Image (tube, one colour):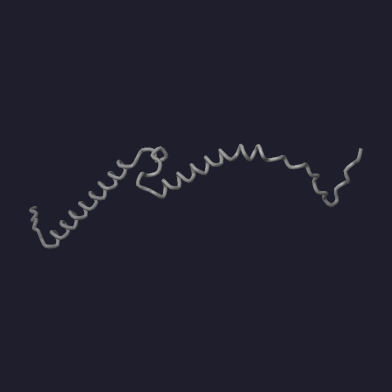
Length: 100
């Protein structure tokens, strides 16, 4: 039995399409590998990106707010007085309190 292989235009088109698809898939695979190797291993340890001004401003505002609360809390505790004890409101149907 003898086989004849000929390059028909259809076979050439399928070959070129397959080659282009292979190159596109290899390129995308390279992009994915590059992104994964460029990311830090621990995102929590990396913190906010250095080029993100919004994240930096929010972090600075949170730090300032916590520092103000730490400084202001002793002043509020010294100047504040304990509220006077008030009796609990009577509930309907409750027995009256016994007097001594």
